[in-house]
Amino acid sequence: MSESPEEFHEFVCDLARRAGELQLSRLDNPGDVTEKAPRDIVTDVDILCENLLVEAIEERYPNDSILSEERGGDISPTGRSWVLDPVDGTANFARANPMFCCVVSVMEDGEVTNAAVAAPRIGDLYHARKGGGAFRDSGGRRTRLTVSDTGTIEYSFVGADLSFSTKRNAKYRKPLEEIFERSWQSRALGSAGIRGAWLGAGYLDISIGTRNTPWDYAQTVLLAKEAGGEATDLDGRLWTPDSEGLVATNGHLHEEVIGIVQSGLRD
Ligand code: IPD
Ligand code: CA
Ligand code: CA
Image (cartoon, rainbow, N blue to C red; front, side):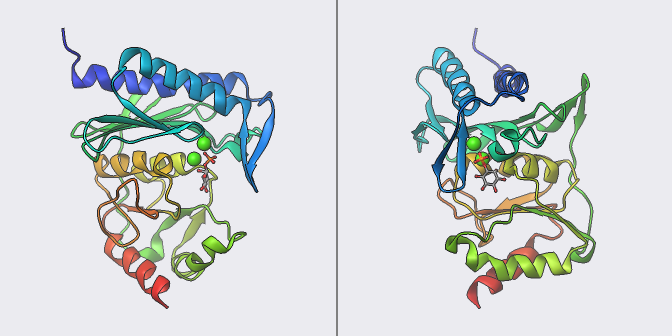
């Protein structure tokens, strides 16, 4: 008997949940911490989670493509692909800060179809299925997610992870500063996965990411849309795995935020 879309989605959620449980069991023992690039670390737990995810996917869906942060791989332009961030927020995890998660996204024909963000230390699993809504599972309850209804940037909460320590990020200083100055409050969580989920949950009104790492953003595209919001690249165009960055909002603020990003990048 073939698998239903609901059954497939439960497998996606279960995968993220299992990696989250592994993270939690190693919270005080991340193992070796290696600097794979300056100020970019990987722990033994990143690798263990990645192995858990990849082995489970390969066993059940041997023909699917997999792109995973630590071991690489590909997103297939036509068939089904898994996009994995085994531990998102590794710098937090390595110092036992609760803001870390496992992110599992599935793409098919260029579109994100399923997403799961397991944040075990805060007890939440955020997930979305294309056309099926976005939800948070927490304390044994499943609750539907809806983006906020904040109508102006002046009353918005903005999430973005700031690091101007590399030249690459210098060009984002101006647009981000303008958005922060105009907004009510800002949040730098240290986890792109949780940031995207919190946009869907309505805890944030705007989420901005300025890297082109698909495992950090694919889930946000679906969670934002299924919760009633919007997600595009920094130009306001369709997000793709090659996009430089992602802007997700509750929808009401999208055009204005994209306008600020664009004019800030031009100046
Ligand atoms: C990082 C986190 C962080 C973001 C970085 C990501 P990692 O992911 O999501 O919030 O600012 O851009 O690389 O390396 O912990 O998986
Ligand atoms: Ca990440
Ligand atoms: Ca990671």
